[in-house]
Amino acid sequence: MDVKRIRLDFPMLQGSAGNKSITYLDNACQSLRPKQVIDAINSYYLKSSACSGRSMHQLAAEVTRGVDQARGTIAKCLNAIKKEEIVFTRNTTEGINLVAHSLGLRSGDTVLISDKEHNSNLIPWQMLAKKNGIRVKIVPSKPDNTFDLDAYRTMFDKRVRLVSFGMTSNLDGVSIPAADVIKIAHQAGALVMLDAAQTAPHKAINVKALDVDFLAFSGHKMLGPSGIGVLYGKYSLLERIDPFLVGGDTVSSSTYETCEFLPPPEKFEAGLQDYAGIIGLGAAVKYLQDVGFDAIQKQELLINEAISAEIKDIPGLRLIGPADPHLRSGIVSFYIDGIDSHRIALMLDQMAAVMVRSGQHCVHSWFHAHQIKGTVRASSYFYTTLEDAALFTSSLKKIIKVL
Ligand SMILES: Cc1ncc(COP(=O)(O)O)c(C=O)c1O
Image 1 (tube, rainbow, N blue to C red):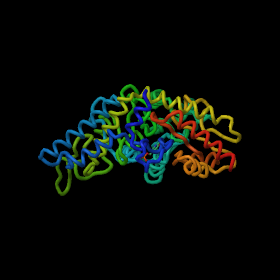
Image 2 (cartoon, rainbow, N blue to C red):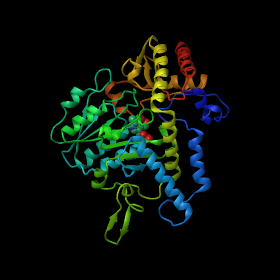
Image 3 (cartoon, helix red, strand yellow):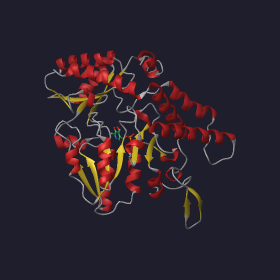
């Protein structure tokens, strides 16, 4: 992969951030956007700024075509059986909430989650526990934070209706063995929801081969616009479950007393949609496919290996997750005994314009359970260079000396 050439596509890496040279290592939070995506968003506002579906005029037809095309691109990328299995949401959080509120879970029904879920895959289930009396059971990870299939197997009883796991953790970059997880759940009669917020940007996902029931991700971590996301669902399930948000565009007709819902995905896409976001996300997915997920992973591993090798002997540095960078995708998350992670992040930014994330990364529950205050998280993407990695590690070492 020609990283130098690829970087030319990203205005933020070409000085658009006030002509400053930046080292952006906060990709697990949000990625940068290439001009192809920005152009697609602009093109909607400049050339076809109308709504899809509702009106008969040519602008509306063009938007409908753009939305259809984006849905098709995403469906193909995920190897979905049909594009109607792709529901546009605002983000991963909305996708998980949609499933949580639509499945009709009742008192005593059990949902399995892991011990290191993002709040977006924890709080919706906690709320259902309060409101509907569902039970939430936590599958413990192994001591190195990798998935414990044996522990997972023992968690099933007849009441487990759903398994909902982060496919790749934003805490440490560790992925779960998704195919095994799904097989075991299905054998026990449970459905599976995967939070793919940290997977979809980095790895090819084949929903058909995985046989996953629901899968959610966000555009903003994979070159797409903010405020647009996707929920994939098997069509037969989408047909069966009730919509979560209802109103305009979800029905074919209504009387004062009742209504007729449209088939999926329309029945889930309530109100006027973020057309620029959808078209921009389609452009983002196309860009990622052109680069290729194998090349993306290769570059991320190169960076993770370089950073991991440089920091491994820093006294007092505790890495979260397994030592092997192959198991941590593009994420290096650590804390240093006695040093506040926010201070490190602030100094990296001020000294060298190296941008990382610090704190508890919306996985507060894991930090409370482990009595750790927070970590510094450096997360790369395919446009990250070895020079970026070197600047990060050398700046970190300087900072540790002065703190
Ligand atoms: C693993 C994981 N799940 C869910 C989310 C929530 O994503 P969003 O805020 O786009 O809904 C994130 C965001 O950081 C994440 O990393």
